[in-house]
Amino acid sequence: MTKVDKAPRNHKTEGAYVKKGLILVHTGAGKGKSTAAFGTALRAVGRGWKVAVVQFIKGKWKTGEAEAAKKYFGKSMEFFPMGDGFTWETKNFKQDVQKAQEAWKRCVKFLHDKEHALVIFDEINYVLKYNFLDVKEVLRELKKKPPMKHVILTGGGVPEELIEIADLVTEMKCIKHPYQKGIKAQPGIEY
Image (tube, rainbow, N blue to C red; front, side, top):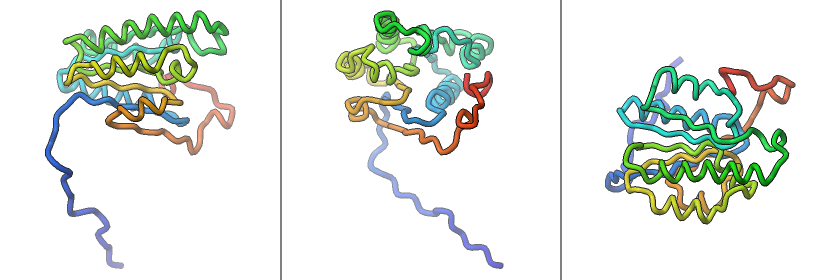
């Protein structure tokens, strides 16, 4: 049997190379939005960048990514869990809004500092979807970010306005999930 080469051998370059700070969005109903962001964070630290991660919602969880950052990366990758947990745990809209506002203030600080090359606003899309933050305020600050600052926004239900200003939008699609078989979130895999 003769094998046929199906690999692409030609590559068309699209225009001139431009270097700029990117706005990346990871959204969708599938698993992997935060995981993709943390993979980029690992890559950035490997390049000598400083990374700041503000986590909306996951505040009470002891996550593997935050523990690894503390244990192995020190000031190179800093985590700030700011939420009180999932909305079905808090059951308090006013408290959720207050926590989201506090987390957003931290995000704005990191967005405009000169120290961090990459900032991750983990699960911010959910708090926008739930009306805990004003999307116009988030857009306003993103548009004022330093030219070389990279930003990743994660969470399902991303507002269309964020999609419009983003440089990259990836939608995670769930094909199959262990939760559908009654298997709960597991440390080291989901958190």
